[in-house]
Length: 203
Image (cartoon, rainbow, N blue to C red; front, side, top):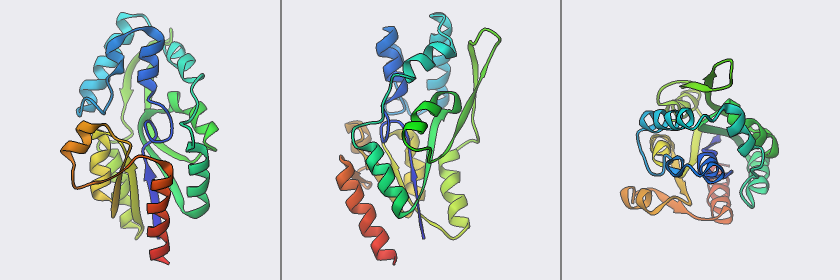
């Protein structure tokens, strides 16, 4: 039996930090795991920038509250959940993801959480566990599930490679060029076709 494990940002919803960058004018916040493979380096720099510009969790949540899922994402998630189990495995944070997950119908989400001070400043980030995406796949496999994994960035690669089937969804060219062995799709229709075929073959 297959379980679908998917990234969130870039697959179902817009990149949160890119939108924070657009709203605040802080150019460097546009960088994501599509650009920088070391997540710790990326997050520490993001927190430095928020501190420098006196932006709080409330400010970031204000940007997120105006975001909508990507066109076609809600329908695709509904289809997946009617066909298989779906787990969203993301390097986002509980404090960011809730309004977006509500719009997607609240599929199961495994992600991280933030530490804030009394003024709402984000002082640290807390990983649910190190290499969490890969370990989710390994845990499901230890329960005799097979995994179809979907992602778009450097931080998804270990999950995609550990799964029985790993699919890059609409990734940037640099990720494609460096991972030519992985299957690439650029639309929900193409993704649905692949998943449907795999599920049919399993029956």
